[in-house]
Length: 162
Image 1: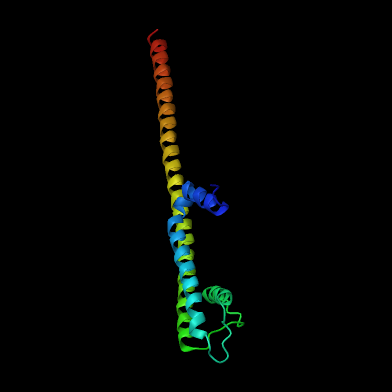
Image 2: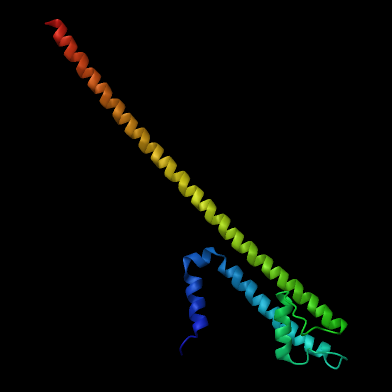
C-alpha cells in the first residue's frame, strides 16, 4: 500500500532534526485540536441554526467554511449565526482561533530566541578559543624574546671577558 503525500511529508518532518527543534509535536497537536474544534463547531452549528428565521448556515459544507472564517477572525459576513446557541458556538470558534494563532506565534518566537541563544553561545566559544590561542602565541613570542636576550647576554659576557 502506497503512503499518501501528506503521510510521507509528515514522516519526513517528524524525523528531521530542524523540525523537531521547531516544536513539531506541539504544532501537530495544536493543528489536530484546531481541526477537531473546527469540524465539531461546523457539525454543531447546523442543527443549532436549522429552522431559525434568517438562518444562512444550512449545510455542513457552508458550516465548515463558516467555522474556518470565524476561527481565523476573517468574518466576511456572508455566513453568521442567528440563534443564541449558534452564537455560543461561534464564540468558542473565535477563542479557538485566537488561541491557535497565539500558540503558533509563541512557538515561532521561542524558536527565534533559541536560535539567537545558540548563536551567542557559539560566538562566546569562538572568542574563548581565540583568546586561548592568542595567549599561547603571546607566550611563545615572549619565550622567543627571552631566548634572544639570553643569547645576547651570553655574547656580551664572552666579549667582555676577552
